[in-house]
Length: 330
Image (cartoon, rainbow, N blue to C red; front, side):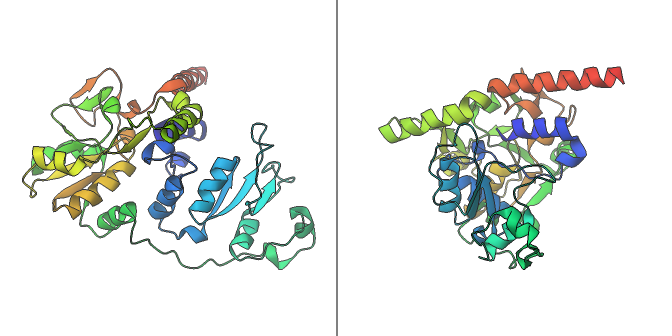
């Protein structure tokens, strides 16, 4: 799902703006909402404390996920969720709105974090010129010691793990002896992969068919699976054992890669804790690749589009076609 959203954002806003936008999607965590995993991942990756975050949601499931993550939550109702229970929300609006009729702004979000929220409507507060709409200085970001993703990010920032861009990957692999380790799920690898790369999936298909899991799978299909083609996944419990079986030498140089760079960041943390010390991280994952970055790619799809499936795959194709037609017309 991450690649689908990234590709659409890039097509609509242009690659330069899209590069500055952090995108987190349900296919990079093992459990979907109402589990808080996606919001905790976002907070950890961005290096902020969950209590310093304000989530904008449109469903009771999303509200539950935000609250379970320890975050403030503003709900904007939609036609599909208007009758759901939002009693736990910090504020509820019919929509975000566009200037000059916007329902709330960043200062309002800041006021929630400062616990200055009053029982006035946003427009009344804005008209009163209350200090609630002054710039709020938030507390400094904190990191979570229990977070796999924070550890992975810290390993990269401290140069313990080497960041390597897709454009320089082939040169470094050939000159320095790095081997490419693909940690994507098998169904993504089957669409496109780099020849002679190693493959050990960090996430695998969740085969549990208990009533609760079946309900979660049904919700996942309705919200994500039909749109993205992504399966309901869980952490691979044999990830480290499989790694040690195919790469027993922990001094081996491994360039760890996934679709968008988040799952590989989790993988390098686990590998480093297991004793693998010569690790590289493919910056942005295969989604940042362009044709020719890896000379030998096998499969029926482009490497940068291998995680895209479902209805969004055809939407992406349509957007690309419209973009080409627009460029030709200009």
